[in-house]
Amino acid sequence: MTFPRRSLLALGLASLLAVSACDKLLPGKQVAYNAVDITGAGYGRTLSLPDAEGRTRSLADFNGKYVVVFFGYTQCPDVCPGTLAELAQVKKALGPDGDKVQGVFITVDPERDTPQVLKGYVTSFDPGFVALRGTPEQTAAIAKDFKVYYAKVPGKSEGSYSMDHTAGSYVFDTKGQVRLFTRYGGGAEALTSDLKQLIKAG
Image (tube, rainbow, N blue to C red):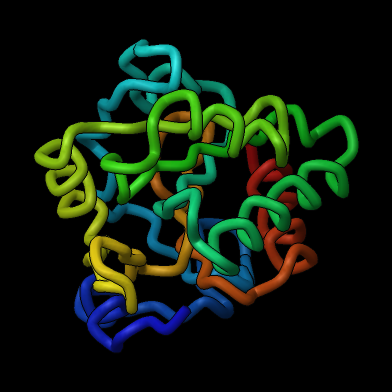
């Protein structure tokens, strides 16, 4: 799967963030994250979508946990399964603290990703992962709120298509505040390290 430059430009990280992923000075602490520190950004404030059971979920439902939000679709050949498998690996690497991490998968392909398909997909990686699915209008609104790019790409056969989308995850703290943006390909070890730092800081 290929990702156009505007996938990352849509995030607006360059204009919104004046800090690098390394050596951001926080009051009383020197923290070096592998991911991009976006503490204070306004992403995800309007997150409210139905889960696979039809219950409307928001970040408030996961208070007390470190929430990792990823946009994708179940027929994604590499990035999406790779990201979910990596997050499952991170939870295991954290040991008992892994229970403090909540994976949330938001589909950008509600046309094909039915609730049943989504539930089976995400729980195949971890039984605690949650999948959210909105209407096309809700999907567009939440993607805009997160500054996530996605688009339908026609396939070779009539009626077939794939989805081009931003490849990265948002990490929220236990109070529902966005803290990090981790790009695809960073690796489980890097995310594990970042989550350990967040958990240690409380």
